[in-house]
Image 1 (cartoon, rainbow, N blue to C red):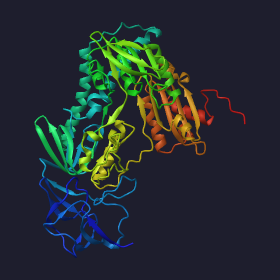
Image 2: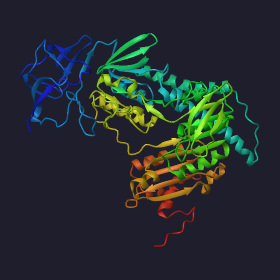
Image 3: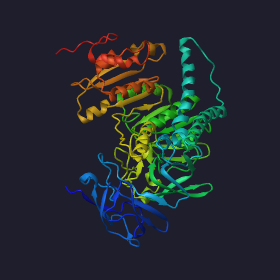
Image 4: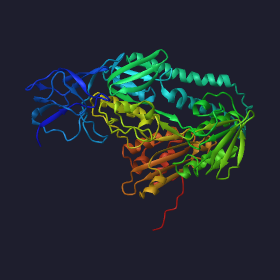
Length: 582
């Protein structure tokens, strides 16, 4: 394989026929990787084109005044140390997102923006601010663009954090009511909706103010407004005071997702998405929740505790589609007693709005033809914002669903642009985005970081909580994967019984050949706090014996994880499990 390579004009966005205003090298020059070769200038921007390799220039193919476009030949060069030319595309001809390739060089932007960043991050949710802060720690000049008035994105402002604050309130209300059967009776709670809303806003405020302080400490410049790409090296941010153009060397897209709206519904303020539900305008007497997934059921938990009569309609044959049926069964049994109705295999075909109420029309399952409600929450999922930021203007490929494909370094098909979080695919979870954000920031700094998580845990903060990580039993059966199972019912847990909650369980799946943990699931109070141990066990390759021999404190809910492993091994003493006869 020859060590002579062609150096071509890399992806420069929508620019074509751009004039060369400076040639910085000549034949015989020795150049380092990333050293500037030529400077281009259009009516909008100037940019230096760096060398993708270290080596010696053998021939320069262009001169000042020439006009070039992406892919045009700039020069030929011999690689340093006689190395062979890499068998991967460089930034001159951006590669498709693959799992294996070294970091390509990117054009060093000299675009004429109002601000310039070595790294610009579009979106300040958990993934975005993590990426920005990590890039700043690595010595980069960072600009962070956020459309909300405060940092934190959807998660902190109108998502994860406010919902958990309200779910805590719901838990306290339900626990006080549940104590009546244990001989302690409290009066019915009096709901001050304004003060409750103030508590929620206070939680948000503490976190977002903390992020603003950290941004200042790290000298991350925050630009507020709606950002859209205008080229491969510029983003236009539309804010209250006009448009600000940010030019950049590297970009990290952390634009998140938006709630899916169902077509054909009237534009009535009583029909809410999750953001509207978290605003707590009032506590409706009758609330319809469309969608039996995690978001819908979490909000149903809140409003049920506050006094609403809840009806849930779900198109699938179970709540929390995708989770194992036995895992969600305890949750279903509990809420079926508390809610007005749960309609499975059903859908809402339309809503009529009148002054008195909202009339929902149903189809399928056991749902009635119509039913009246005071408010409706639409929680049927979220769609990525890939098409909302004009990523195509930067040359970034966005698929038909709005997702942006990336490699293990979170790099898009445009070498100097990365993407993280909801916009790159499932699962749409904040804790996935934060890890991806660190990877993207480090990769943009030239580090060999990669996103290689074996598993990502999922949690529904309902009552009881539902959590799982790794392989599910449903997936194992569908994929024909052989597995062994250990189950420990919380009815045999002293800690669970002392809480007055015996409906939970812990289930673990193991590889029969190696004994290694493949997946785990839990349902019960605080299941979301327990699942991390299972995630760590999978990451470290722990087997059933490792887990069972790890001494857990007693009495705790955490020991149910060890007992599920013992149940699989046949060493458990807290249950009697007859041995199978051969």
